[in-house]
Amino acid sequence: MMKKYCDYCGAEMEEGFTVCCNCGKTIKEAQKEKFNPFITKETEKDAPKQEHSNSNIKDDGSIGWFLLGLLVPFIGIILGAVWNKEKPKNARMLFSGFGLSLFISIILKLSPLSCIWGL
Image (cartoon, rainbow, N blue to C red; front, side, top):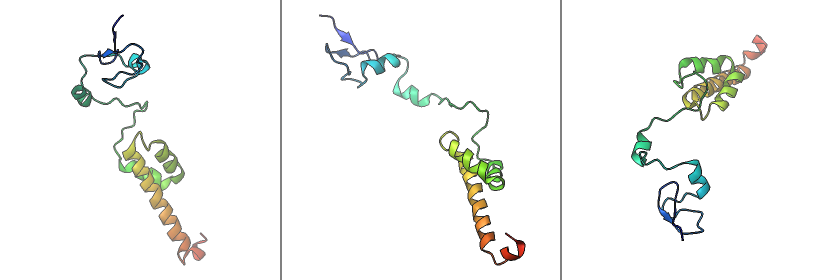
């Protein structure tokens, strides 16, 4: 009988098992992520996270995004929804600008001067 070893962690596996008792990976998962003895949990934490974004736009949350959400609220709400997970700081500024724009338009509609201004 041939001994079987986990492709991910290298632990010995019983014949017929599809899940490693040591690391919990299935054989299919282990084939996707091959074992690399140089990567440990500590080095995974220290490794820089790669951004999956294709754009060159930084997630800096600058005032420009706030102004875009304020002056063009339709664009602000759409971009904010799209960037909610990818660029959270920019999305927050877009939503803030949209919220202020909405607040100002409601105040102007409710003000007694709205009849004079024709709003």
